[in-house]
Amino acid sequence: MPRASDASTACPFGPLAGPLLIAPDALGRYRDRLRDVDLIALANAADDGAGAGNGAPAAPYELRNGVATVLVSGPTTKHPTLFQRLIGGTSTVAVQRTLRSLRSDPDVRAVLLHFEDAPGGTVAGAMELYQEIRAFAAAKPIRAHATDQCCSAAYLFASAAARLTANATAAVGGVGVRAALYDTSKRYEREGVRPVPLATGKFKAMGMPGLPVTKEHEAELRRHVERVGAIVVDAVAAGRGVTADHVRALEGRTFLAAEAVGHKLVDAVCSFEEARADLERHALNPAAAPTVTTTAASTTTAALPAAWAPTAEDLSRESDMRLLEQLRTMTGAGPTASEDDVLARLRRMLPPPPPSAAQVQAEVAETMEYTSLGRRAAAAAPPPLPRAIPSYELTPPPTLTAAERAEVEETLGMTGLGRRVLAQRDAVASAA
Image 1: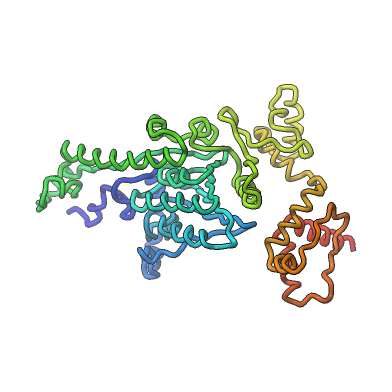
Image 2 (image 1 turned 180 degrees about the vertical axis):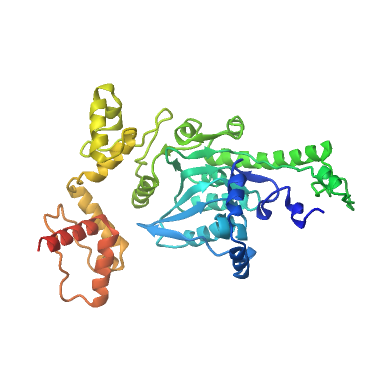
């Protein structure tokens, strides 16, 4: 006899039923993970109230230098599900609630949506989150970054941001909708079961387990998929500033980040940390142009300043291949490491150049604005900005209260100027 679970044959995941905005291989990968799930853990998770539906909490975020980073990882569904509790994933409703909260938060200057291993998900809730991101962009800067994968529904969301970057090996795109009907009538026939549909129309029982799938059923599902697909294509085109024909011509393909730049799906190739640092600079100075740029034919990020190391273009020349090999050995990057990897490792190894007067002034202004102690001091008597700081006063005046000393420590950890003070203090302590 067919088991009760046969009713879900059309889609192995209840929360992902219906037309999907998800990468083709994603369901298989998550199905394989489910095979290893402990049934006791499954029952315990259910007892704990996983998949509480409309009670979705706001998605967590990390706030640094005025930029809130919101993580979107795994498959997306409208509401939290038990599937997400066990395997991972993101509720679009939870992200919406977070964005609404961040829009009115005075400490948040900008938002970075971080899409990590995000293959897409359900159609349900997708357009609502897309519209929420567009509405946020009208109030505050919002950008997106893709790490490893940002496809289908995840790409729909990312396209709504003002700027989209991706790491070099990220799979990006996959714009489109898909669905399937599974004809299980032969299986039911072999097991001696004849389902009898009682429905009010010829399409009402479409997809019911045990019923044959007719050409009319296929045409009806295709009609639905194409109509939803047109909505998604138009939304992506509007978000990326291209035509709908341009998006349709991609035929649902995914691309590595550098290819995606050429297809106008991505603005630049860089790491997550570079994308976040660039947005932090923009949050402090909205008129500043992005510092991370990529041309369609390039796979490298912005060239490093000459004070740090040779540029990627220099290392790629045949005359500099010996230098590249030496740098690979020196940095421990390995014999096949790319120029960008070598440069990133070298940059971490080399000491930073001394700060310029302009940098010090900017850091002092940042310090005054970003902490409660600095804001109170600025309101009382804004101090003149120094042209340079030859040395740092490492010991707070004894007149500070305990609360003010705590604010000084907060200041030191939050700004570039403060972090250099901490580094000097630690160096003095080590020498003693």
